[in-house]
Image (cartoon, rainbow, N blue to C red; front, side):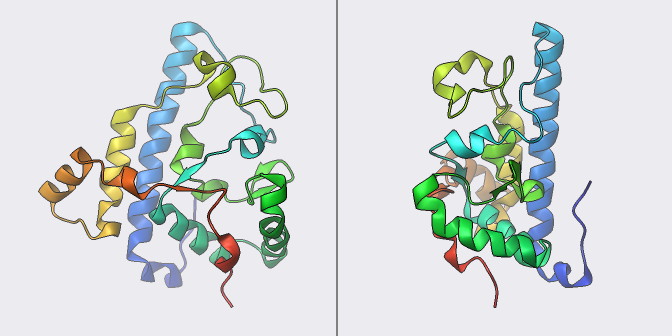
Amino acid sequence: MQLWFDKQDRQYAWLSMLLESYSIVDSGIEAAIQVEKGRNKRQLACHKGCGNCCRSQTDIPVYPHEIASIYWYVNEKIPSETRSLFTKQIDDLRDSGYCPFLTDEQCSIHFVRPASCRVFNVFGRPCQENEDPFYTRRYDVLIPPIDYINEAFYTVLPFYGIKDRYDRIDAMEEGFINSMIINLKTYDWKGLFSE
């Protein structure tokens, strides 16, 4: 299933570059998963309805361009009853430590989930409750394909006003995008909903 655009969505010039960057990341992840499956005959443990990483991960990196896409998606594409559920979850976030967008063990913003969520894939056995496999069995965690990740970040640099090709190359070499990291779980999502 793909994201859809209404005429109203075209007002967001940054949206197409963001979706393109997600497509690049997804292509790279799919290729890396296929290589891992073929080379080492390992199966992906991640499956629809798991949600363990949404509960156990303490740091979920998110970038301002991804926050903008989450705001857009929640306000333009999510049904109002789901948005009402987010309000309660955002209020309870500090107590639960869960991602506020985890509903019924599924990511309710799956189409615009951050790149960090897209790249986090685990092989072998499913994760145990509250297990963070990055620390317990790092060898089972997919190594993200850095070339694809860099291309995706390069694609969204115009969102930050960096449009010239050479300026974008310099920004990538200087680690500009890494200076923009925010933790999804500590970000103040209370302003998420448009009035």
